[in-house]
Length: 186
Image (cartoon, rainbow, N blue to C red; front, side, top):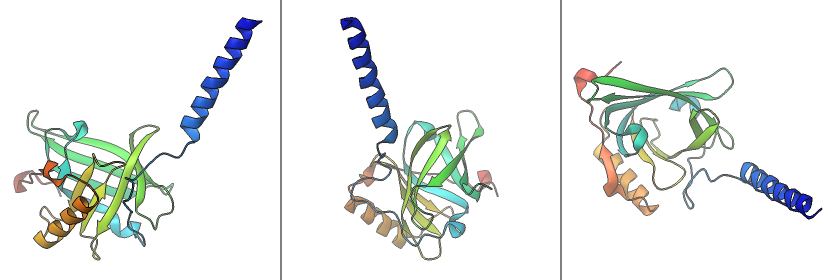
């Protein structure tokens, strides 16, 4: 009888823990940071060049990095990330999807390249013409400066770096992405 009680108790603890993990709201954006409101997803679609990033394992060693966004039929956003791996002399490509966390007028998204596992993708600054953007992940370990061109205007770059620093991002860790014209794909 005592053995059954222990098994039932252990099963209940595991079930409660699993339910808490699955149902508890996941943090998608760093505390104190806000995503752009009045966001226009259609204007954001298309090709972006990575100007700078915090380096992490999925982009380690890549240059000429681009991200291309298009609308899927189910309302999610198709994401195609490409980058050049000089050691292998080839482009790497990752295809994923992004979903809006709240509604599509708030630039707080979650993105997945690996099935059911999502991570934060939050546009926290964008110019009125949708030509330059500052994007952060779910915590202060992920940050990207993106532009529709291979270079970002200095005044916008400086404003985005100041904003990032104001929100506690260590901009000295940024890796500035190389874009050689001979490797740029249309």
